[in-house]
Image 1: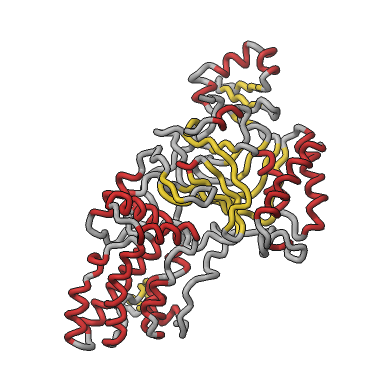
Image 2: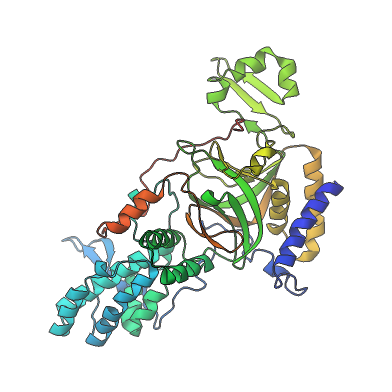
Length: 475
């Protein structure tokens, strides 16, 4: 028990030492997630820095009713054409070249057509042209330019179109006259994105510029603001970051999925609980395909020694569950983050794998070095409202861990977890570097940058979720 207290103390101590703000005695809430106690939305408060040009329009004013001959309203569609004056349109025209600094392509946005419409003066042509170009800029700055079919295994659904709808942004920009400010406010707020933008400005090598642009676009595929605290794994870096107030408080080496069918998909989920001393239900590919079921049934002594229990149904179906223990394939903990892929962060008995430089070795789930420290830290940060409550939670969690019994420890304050894929960006030491494209996912993104801009892009991938279950294979 003392050992686990020391582990947890080192995690919290590292957090405090790494961030002077967190070390202040009068600021315990900086270390703990904010209220409300239980987050039910898929992502945290990513609107805290959202653009707020005045005056704020009524959403109802931005819709047109579609009526049947009977007069019945059957649906509402957003109005994507607004009345523009020449000064506003000139501001939009001046903004178009600036998107090159964001890694976008100015020629996508019909500057010549807008110039011609401005020359004609106010009227239908100017209204339609300027409104369309504005909405295209909103879509690319807010959501990314890359179409969904080029985002391989990207299962994150960007919430920004719901938080910052195009028709509302159009209305606010025209009403306030702050065209450039509304559009500039759509950029990701992450310091990582800002560093990529700085690097793009100073880089002349065409191949490097294109790679930077691709990874800037990947930031736009996520929520504009990831929140005050979250877990983030960049799969090609083989690292997990515990981030608070845009600072990495702690990072952990990880093992990720092998290339191919068991490659780790990209997700944005909520960690709902910590599971201590987990069980592992062995997949049928091993129970039946590799003969483990028959081995467990026919060799009870071996099964007990390795923690396996098997049950055989009337139809002959064999289920094998590995019981909690140090030899369990999931180790001594996992973070419970329900998703269709059955992906989660967990411990592992195969500690030697963390010493390798290339760690794409699992069947999709993410194995974490120092997982027990992470589990206890998350249990505390997910349930304490003040520093005074930390010792009691620490004691409880230490006893649960030492008991060896399966225990699901809910987190009242759930944490978002992002599983991302960046091949160029900041590493855990704050240095810009290129990461190996271990799954070959750069090529379609780079090709999309050269292709004409796609209209009416899908928000969600059409790829099917493949349920991935980690197994005992360690190489």
